[in-house]
Length: 91
Image (cartoon, one colour):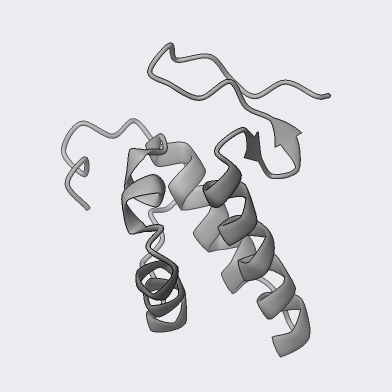
């Protein structure tokens, strides 16, 4: 990740699984993913990887892709986006 040196993440940094990378590339969403703050990228990956069932993992990946495509949601919460540093707020 390009922002590895300046990251202030408190949770362990997650590696991107191949299936996530392939889905982002296939749908042209890698740029949208990379534009997200480090905490969001890390949270998405940890959340997807923590699923015990393949069906849950697929559902979570689908949600992430949908939120990246729309650009205004993060973990099913409204997200103002941009570089304002604002945290997501509940709808």
